[in-house]
Image 1 (cartoon, rainbow, N blue to C red):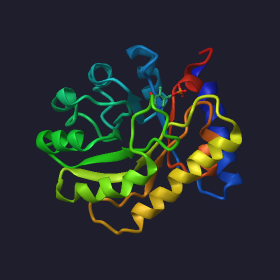
Image 2: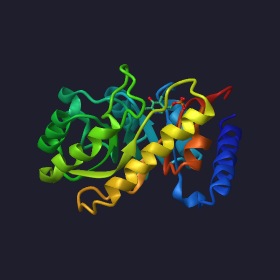
Image 3: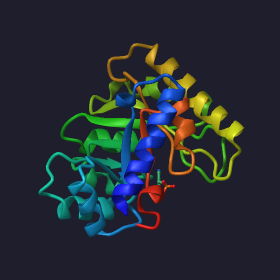
Length: 225
Ligand SMILES: *Cc1c(COP(=O)(O)O)cnc(C)c1O
C-alpha cells in the first residue's frame, strides 16, 4: 500500500534526522513517479504529496496535465535535459535538478520567462557514465553564471554510485555538502546554494545524515504497492 510505504519512508527520514540532530522540516521528500502511470501519481497527490519528479520531459508534461487539479504540486525535473527540449519544459517546472553544462545554462537563459531554481549537478566520483561537473569544476562554473539572470542556483545535486558501500556513500554525500558550503560562502546573490538534492531509495538515510535537504524517492514508494 502506498500509505504504508510513505509512512515507512517518513519514519526513516525522521530517524535519520534525529541521528544527525537535524529538524525533519529541513528535509523534503520528492516523489519520483517515472516508473508509474498518471493514476498512481494522482493517488500520491490525494495523499498530500506536493513535490513530484520526473526524469523525462514528455513524462513530466503528461503527469502535470493529468494532475492539473492539484495546483499546489511543485514539479521537479531531475534528469538530464537536452538543449532542444528546454523550451518545452522550462516554464512548466519549479525546480531543475540537473544543470550540467554552460550551453544548457545558455539555453535556459534564452527560454525562461522567470528565474528558475536550479541545482548544479556534480559527479563526485568522476564516473565516466555520469553527467555533472567534477568537484573541482563547480566553483568556476558557478562564477560563469553571474550574467544569467534567469538562473538561480539553489543548491547542488548528485547521484551516488550504485552498490557503493555505506562508507563510500558517506564520503560522496559529505563531499557534496562541503562543496555546497563553499558555494554558499561566496555569498553570490544568484547562487544562495542552501540546498542539497541527494539520496534515493537505497541511500536516503545516509544522505540525510550528511545534510540532504531534498531526497528523491521512487522505488521505495511503489515497492509492492
Ligand atoms: C529514478 C531517479 C531517482 C529515484 O530513484 P529510486 O532508486 O527509484 O528511488 C532519483 N533521482 C534520479 C535522478 C532518478 O533518475
